[in-house]
Length: 110
Length: 115
Image 1 (cartoon, rainbow over the protein chains, first blue to last red):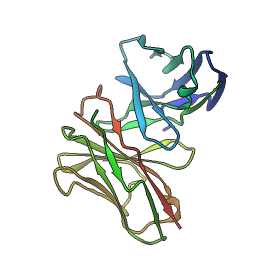
Image 2: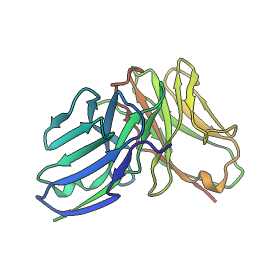
Image 3: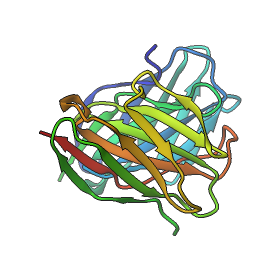
Image 4: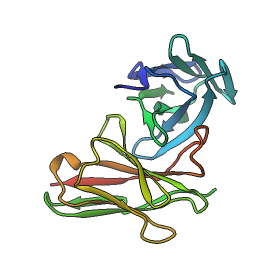
């Protein structure tokens, strides 16, 4: 089954604007993680939100989690050109299996 | 900051040839993973490895694939007889423990091209 589907697939905004990306999942989770991938590079962990949390902040990042709707959102405020990357949500499936979604390609235009 | 290192960064091979992708996980990490990403597509789980054995594997990880931790530092992925569809970026990842709130640390990947 597809777990962690991001929406939109691609997002292009002007520098300084806020970027919102969404993630939906199908099964129950203990936590949901967001990762960032610069072009041609490995994924870098951004933030983890536990199932009993509704919102979490880290710098310019804000993550929300709605377990009743099985969805999460990642908000990047005051975007910068350096935020241009792909963003993935990930959930645990099984004991040792972190499953990633399709990702959102974010482009920040100067 | 400690990091996961992967070699080579690019690997070109002929269809049917064997390839070995190498990874050095972070030294105090105990759980190791391989993922792959076909260009522009999702990051797909291949296999997890703990205590010198496979913990989980996906349907992609068939008999052509194997993993090994030959010594205390390296973690390798072998593809015995490569196919064109094995062309992808392969990422190694590690984490300190198996608890669900632990994040993964990824290497920069090996771009495998099968001709």
